[in-house]
Length: 419
Image (tube, rainbow, N blue to C red):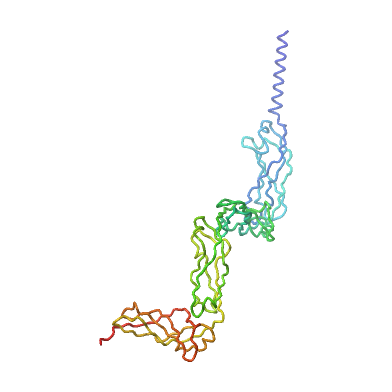
């Protein structure tokens, strides 16, 4: 009796196992729903070639209800079901409804799965005209560096000075620049790193639309932050050409500048020395001198106060000028045993001074002198100095002087004849 009961229970267990196997493994009527399956957009480059693009960067998703062998369905999930929409058949902008294909992992036969429903059956895409253009890259520096330090904007370098922005034509047309913001608050050292940028429209407003892209993700910026020192601008004026320091006004475009550099460089730099300013070489109508600051600074030192050059304006108080022809040439210190002959017979010079004296000046009042101390036999050019002789019928010439110029004469030196 006990044996019959055991056989009965065994048969029941076998039957249940067979039923469970059929239900869980072999039943073809199993159903599963998969949500939010992303659709891959294929052949977007074809759209680009046609001057089109898909508006928005978010991939469309689909919900699928599938049926099939449970062992196959168990292998599926929302990430290994592939949905592909082919964009190569789109030729125009506007709202488009696009079909998509469904495929499963390679070990699952495609015909073993039935699609009971797909929502949506077609994906909706907004197609717009695409454009691109180059825009400049600008840098905004904000914050205050460490005390005594300044950013050297003149030496700032960018890995890209322009960026090609691409996206919907309506947006690209509004973009005027790409802007980087660098915060230097408390900084006292070199900045050398990559920065993200933001596009700005023609009105100076940021444009953060994700449909806009640049040809590079970030831009490397190299910015020096160095110590700063204020130094004066100095010069040495010398009188000449009838102009004295008393009747001359000299004005600098800037009297002090700020420079930046290494500490040891700045400690040795005490001033910008423009050197000698010869008043005798400055004409009334050409009285502005220009000095390029870079020529007066050591390598590695930069002007940070904004000036690239300094101008010196020289004005004279009640000075007038007159052109005279010099015909009197004299020499001094003639070498022993030689004789001298002036090949140059006349030259034109400008004499400047007070009007009340200049009106009495004649050509004969001006004498050119040559120092022949180091002269050698033969013909050569020599520099000269001038003497202004007084008139017998006027007061002594005190304010007059010959203006500086390229005044040279040719002298022939020969052996003196024997006595």
